[in-house]
Image (cartoon, rainbow, N blue to C red; front, side):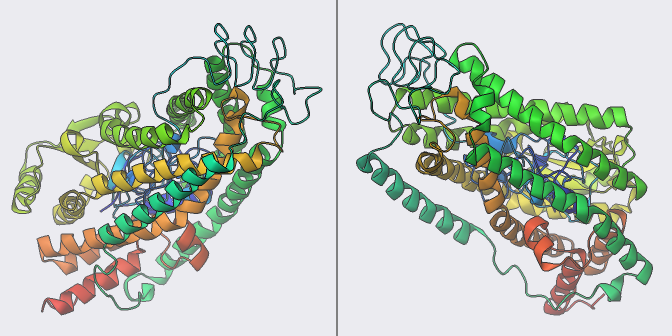
Amino acid sequence: MSDTDDRRDTGDAARKAGTRDDEPSEDGLREDDSPREDGLREDGLHEDGLAEGGAEGGAMAAVGAGHAGGSTTEGAGHAGGTAVGGAGAGSGATVEERAGSGGVIAGGAGTGVGETAVGVGGRVAADAVPPRGRGLFRKAAGSEGAAPGESAGSEGAGPGESAGSEGAGPGESAGSEGAGPGESAGGAGRGGQGHRGRMSVTGNDPEAPAGGSMRPAAIALVLLGLVIVAVAAFTTPWRALTAAPPDPARDFTAAQIAKAQAFDAATTLPSYLSLALTIIFAGLLVATPIAPRVLGRLKGPWWLRVILGVAVVSAAVELIRWPLGMWFETILRDYGLSIQDWGGWAGDRLKNLGVEVFLICVMLLALVALARRFRRWWIPAAVGAFVLTVVTSFVYPVVFEPLFNDFTSMEQGELRTNLLDMARRDGVPVEDVLVADASRRTTALNAYVSGFGATRRIVVYDTLLRAPQREVELVVAHELGHAKYDDVLYGTLIGGLGAGFGAIALFLVFNSVRRRTGLTSIGDPRAVGVVMGLMTFGSLLMGPAQNTISRHIEARADVHALNLTQDPAMFIAMQKRLAITNISDLSPDAVEYVLYASHPSGPERIAMARSWAKLNGVPEP
């Protein structure tokens, strides 16, 4: 039902807000669509960052497509396992982070590694840290994907470096360790005074790709883009089931509709403010020399300056987002969606930041190393970004999710027996059903699938176990649909391809922004801020496409749950419970639907269930 990353409806809200609680999201399969509060950070824009981040559609990893990769938690990023690039955000995103708004500025793909949206769909918000995978509620995104050039890189001298000049950029002379490209010994950190535009000592611009080197990259970008479009087109269930127009007034009381509208109105301002700050901050990184000048003050070998640069930019983004995150968290508490204390909230957020910084550092260290050694670094970078996205999506459930939640096997009993029997009937191998201790953060309901192969698992929130057993079985049936159709795996594949696409796009785009930022080479550690800004814009641009794909995947999982349980009446009861408990937006406006909705709205899902009943000769609920 959801991509773990699927942010909860709350998630949608959170997405909207762009902020998040900072736990890594599930894997993208979650059911929730919650907005993220801050929008600025992780994931390049979806707060859910890590986990969810990857929107199904395969967010452009390298460029910051936060959604890529595979799963979404409830609001987290969509499917596709965002590669390292922006997955950063981490599961802990809370509803506040309306991912859609473009959450993570720095890291780019906030949404999470390898998650796909598959959530049941409600606002899950409170759960700041959903695991990755497909969940009932999907946040928008993000994330995030792998950053460009994340492949292993060799640390050696860059082009034009002489022996002994380790750390020197292209065009540097021996002994100028730490100096930026084009700098002579002793000129590290200076703006290249006397050499306008930071030209190299040889008089050549080391980063200006010749027309001959740009052309192959442009051709590769077009071809890879066509492959991504083809894979997405053939793997996305565009017409899961035709349904009548949704009618919230048929199933929800006037008071329930009014409460949903009030919650949406309360989160709209912080959400759009977060989006605006994200765009402004990313614009400053990309279009001005501010970041290179600040990062040029850092000392040490190039690899240390890359790490410190990522930490500085990420910390600046977090400082900007922190007040918005508190604002959003306060709204969640006012509506009873969050029950976390401020210490726990801050701890989750800082853990999420740590995961994000780690993933971005891995990505950018590889990128800078490759750029310092190879003129056509985009080739190994694209391959590395793909591999990094796949690996991150695979290990996320067992490496990152436990940082934010404790998981236990569901207790022996009728519910567990029924769930495992249902999985066997469905032909989906499930060894265990895990329960996450989400109740320490939120009252929202959710479940998700994360990982693939040996790391695939089905997780339900302990809050969901308070619902009637039959409704829990329907939620898990939705998640089994994600598993049966390998939504996380396909999301990861698209996310990996998107990450490769982003790496190539970075090679082409960087040339157009380097002069105004005072840089000559992406191999210069001072370029870290520019790359992170470009990743953020990439995630923002990819978000709507990722959400569109996620909504169709979620609809297919809903149809699967109906086919498996043959109980549309209980399905509708479950959707009503999810929408009411998670305070889902029952009538999202067009803009918010495009920006933040990784799942169909509750009324849309209910209308689909009634259409299913008609088609199958079952009394219409």
